[in-house]
Image 1 (cartoon, rainbow, N blue to C red):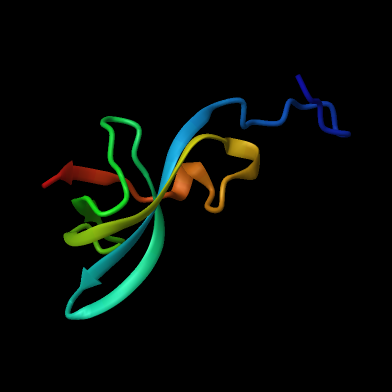
Image 2 (image 1 turned 60 degrees about the vertical axis):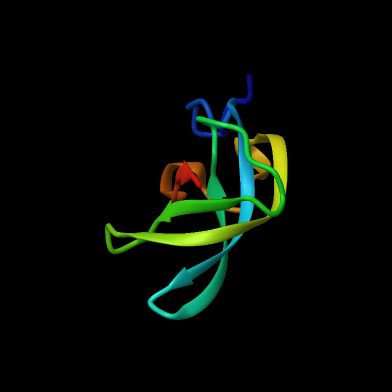
Length: 87
């Protein structure tokens, strides 16, 4: 366990599946990283992802990284958007 210099304990002991997705958001293609811990996906799969405005968008999985530590994730896990459904 890692401790901060101020006496607290640093978060981030979990591992997650991080997927890179090319999502179609309001007619515009956007590439982003999403957390997908509920089910398995592979590159090329079509999925539904959540958006920052509370909606959903369809996208294609470009890359899947399994067992990514919260400490070295490309996005902060607490603020990361999720994959909602595999099509």
